[in-house]
Length: 189
Image 1 (cartoon, rainbow, N blue to C red):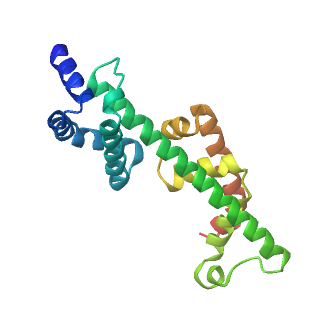
Image 2: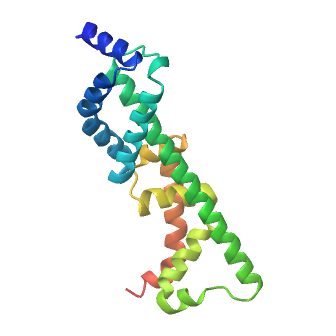
């Protein structure tokens, strides 16, 4: 089997489109499942796998594969998927910061909430959003990823390159602050 795989790698390096097409059809669905397990988004998982195969084809002549071909492709998919999660996390953090800055400007002008919030949000939702915005950036980011986006502690740990215990601690802190802040609303239920 290893000789056959080495033969495929050699033909791929020489730009053999037939071998590339065969590898693509053989690995595509498995790689999409692996990417989906990390990203929890089928469209993004398919996009990641497409990008990986495009990159594989564009760089086929300079490939340096020290493991099996499947392990090499799996590693590429995992790394690209994790990069996508990191980019998403940075985007979430940036959006949260932008919202905080806007909220601060509105507060300076004497307008603490937008018209949309007043018309379509309950007092509980407004209090929740306000408390969430008051959390430290990392704590807020971890809470959003876990409780609102559904990522596991381990996935967040990998994504942000922090320990699982740090993730648990930050979630616990966020829950304590939210519970304390929302207690007046919860006692009415």
